[in-house]
Length: 485
Image (tube, rainbow, N blue to C red; front, side, top):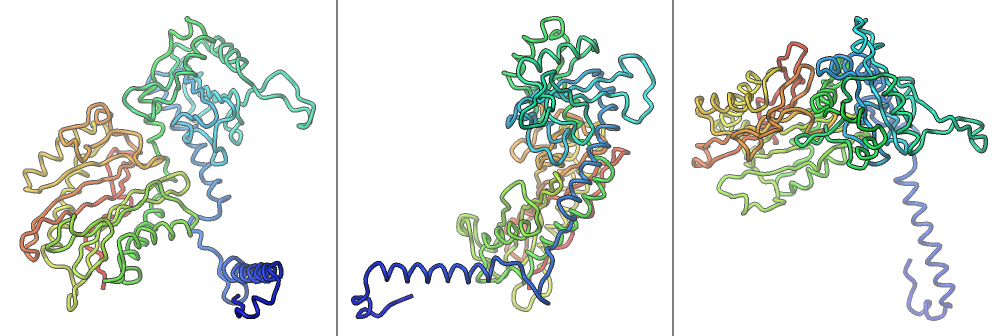
């Protein structure tokens, strides 16, 4: 509100302030009604929820957890010769395996939580009936996770505000109960999460290890053994319904990348790459989903270097576009790189040289998919793939990685962009059945229509390694550039 100067001089300062405040409140109320209120009437639309409500999503995730604990965990403990696995952690300093062991409604450990898994069948020599009953799941602190764990409580009753419930185990009492439990079970091997190679299997902090070692005593501590492969494979292994869900999630990724690389979003001569980045972030957010990294969009242009284009160029006709994007939903992650081309006036398709460049990357994808199989190390897959790549005359780089519960997931790396001669340690782990892989790589080709200028076609698609140990695309891979008119 603006007052005429003469009137402003005649009014008192407090009155003017009150008028201005009232006007501001009215403006805010009007704006709130316009953008904050729920739509009503014929134009009202329910929010798009591609995977159901949060409650429905949590129910599905709980079913995945139940199946993982009943079928995957017992088999892995037996495979790696572990009859007891102990995982202590404190609130906000959780073990990386934590999210693979708890319900979707559990966001952090309770004070201190100690998960204990004991394979009673292996210890006694009994036959496993296959229903998960052999492995006892015990939580010393924390909850039962929807009935999936036996939650041990303290002997102390609390009669104040909580109505007589038993107190939670706390402090040294937890270590005392753990010692009693292990002495009762008498495991030959006590697996702990310690590793100098994999972050996923190095969740036992120094403080917790010191406290546990002191409390259990030398006889039990002598049975500690790093659970490197056990934790790594538990995190990496996916159950069948997760695969079915992942196909739907990939369909959403494709829908959004194709929309982003279209005339709906890209306005040549106007749109910057950052506009596309934030379009992606907003779309994912509006769907009630998340992402595990800031997406990126880049440009290649005839006659221009990356330095000349700068960090946030305006997109022009004739540009090659590349995106690197991810979505997080129901605790699972995607990682995708797609490519597009902005048509010049009069063009109906991309130049043949750009199509050939994409085809070279497709051939490199085929090679990696053919070499990737259960039982091989990441370094073995890398070496075999690079040998075939060079024999095919492709100038490329391979830097593929597991994906699933984490974007850069648990399991063996197949190269890093700057380690094409193998990745010591992290590349020596073996591919397993029922894990997921992000096939990430690039090839560089000289494009005749661009005067022989090198063009890099980087692609990334997620693949599922089946129970037979062989990979298939989660849904498909890009074999045609997305065209922007």
